[in-house]
Length: 76
Figure 1 (cartoon, rainbow, N blue to C red):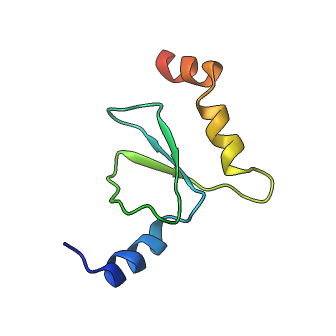
Figure 2: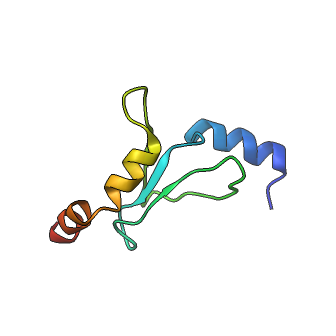
């Protein structure tokens, strides 16, 4: 098990609070917004989508869980 300081430092290199992670292999189409309290590991089968000043992570999450987006994922 990683010590908390090592884990927290490595997490900062890859993800930020508010990023949306999205499975691209296996559980395709299920987004999740990262929270400060989350402790996790990511594999190469996960996309990390970072919001910016023009795109709120909550909006991105709700869009990605919408029927049109989910239908597009299933069609792909």
